Length: 254
Image (cartoon, rainbow, N blue to C red; front, side, top):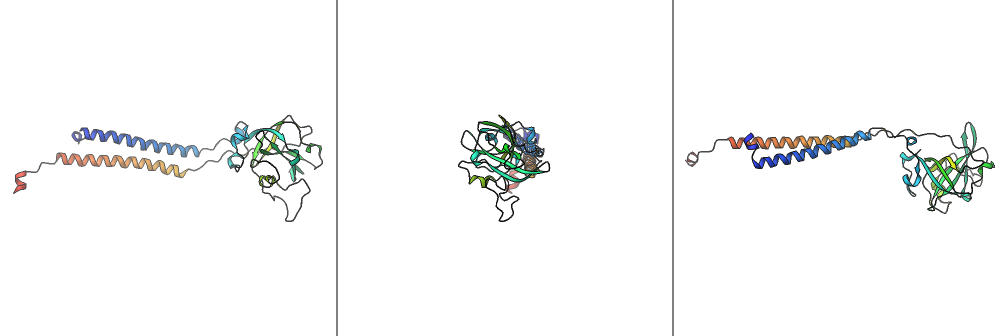
């Protein structure tokens, strides 16, 4: 077998086998590592540095689940004409209203900002700052438009049942980012200002079980093993043919 294996033809086949098996094992290892990385919990959004909202989100895009709770910053000017209040919101056992004001950015798009909580609709903190502001807060998903409203119930002018991007988009003259930013801080700070909502940092990204990647990893290893088996069988058969006694031409003629 060794004599056959060292022939030029088989040396070329050996090299081809090494390249093929090496590639298959590398692909198997890559798929395995992808599955292992996905199975590790990701960092919680509060562990990530704040970034401009436009870096992680897009106008017209539904807020991805993994962005809920992500710390972001956004600069612009509040649109006082489109501010709304959301009633029946509890903070510390007290019922009041959320103050929701669109923040218009330099590119003309709007971000709904929950500036905080007030005990009543006529609270002085409802007043909207008129200067440009830098807002830091957490992205949160849009609420259901009819949250907490009984069928047929009508709210006072300037109040809405929920922070619903879809519902408010029909009222404002500019595109809105989906979801809203729960304000944590603002520069310059408003005086007086609504009480910021209690922060509820989200949990870390849950681990994923990537069965497909594990299956691909095993599949590539099996392919590599099968290639080695075919190589060994072909080499064995070639060696047997080479070592078989030559047929006697006289005997075969008779």
